[in-house]
Amino acid sequence: MAVKKVGRFSFESPFVRQLEEGFPWLRFRPELEPGFVESHFERTRNFVRAALYAGLGLIVLFFVVGYVMGYPTNDWIANLVRFGFLAPAFLAAIIVSHIPGLRQAFRTLVVMTALAIGLGYVVLNATAPDELRQTGFAALPVVIAFIYFALGLFLQTALAIVLAVTVAYVIAALLVGVPADQVAYNLALLIVANFVCGIGSYMLEHALRSAYLEGQILGEMVERDGLTGLYNRSAFDRHLDKVWRMAKRQRKSIAVLMADIDHFKAYNDKHGHQAGDECLKKVAGKVAAAARRPLDFAGRYGGEEFILVFFDIALEAATRVAEDLRRNIEALRIPHRASPTAPNVTVSIGVAVVEPAETRHSPAGVIQLADQSLYECKKQGRNTVVAGEIAETHIRTGVFKSA
Image 1 (tube, one colour):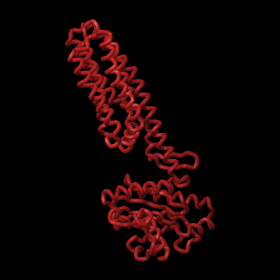
Image 2 (image 1 turned 90 degrees about the vertical axis):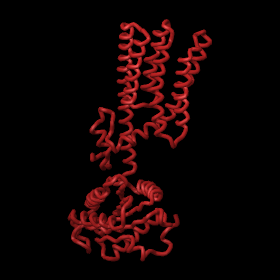
Image 3 (image 1 turned 180 degrees about the vertical axis):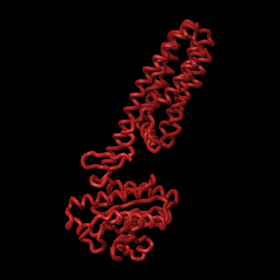
């Protein structure tokens, strides 16, 4: 993982790593790409919806104008394409765009609509009277630009669609008898249009992806503790609330581990605050290393206290993680000449495991249970781990809040 350093902030960030590695093929790492896709479509939803409304309006407008200008409007093939193919595609995408729960369906319909626009126009051009066909062709590069820029498509998707449209145009033009030299000339124009639009689309998407990464990095900086690089208290509150609701739906367990550096005030008094800061950083490194899975969380709870959250983990496994963390911090062998517990820096860790679907306790309750477990550690002499089941017998009445 790359380390981002801005002022006092120093923390590992997959977004920094991606930014430093670059993305010449306009694709992020697998763990980052879905987040960007979701963010992009949510950000562009209103713009794409407006483009869809405009496209649907143009279909009706051109039909009306054609009728007023005396152009033939009774061509059943053209009307089938307009009102049996294109208009329903626009309408379906517009309707789905207003339904938040159908995000994936909206993306799929936008792609299908883009393909329908391109192929539909090719059919309209091929079925137009000979004297209007070349004039009508002049609008095809505009259609291509619409596909590239108006529907929020990524470059690779838009490129695949417009290449299919280009091939379809060449085949259709030859089938209806357009002279080969005219087809070659038109193909050259389409290649130029694709090249120009492709370059513009590449630059636009690259800028959007860069802005997304930079925004995520700034967001991480807001959620991180400036000294240790771990997540801060507010980030912990949000994460616990999220995984609590998830665990309740899926009937999974949640473990909260609260770790406290033993006799840290005495350490600061003896070794100085600068040494204390370095101690916190080293301990934080081991705390962060304990949170390996996507939903694992490691944060600084305040002062010399750290907190970890694990999703879908049994009490025994959570206790093993806590014991491994305790040993790893002790193995740092940071001298602590003011500690009555050990010659080196040690930690006490309280463990609490609950199943949100099976308990009346709230997220605040599991924090209190972990804190109470930590209190038991200190009663037992520190540099130890106490699990929630042990401490629960000592919980004071009224500690837990109802869910």
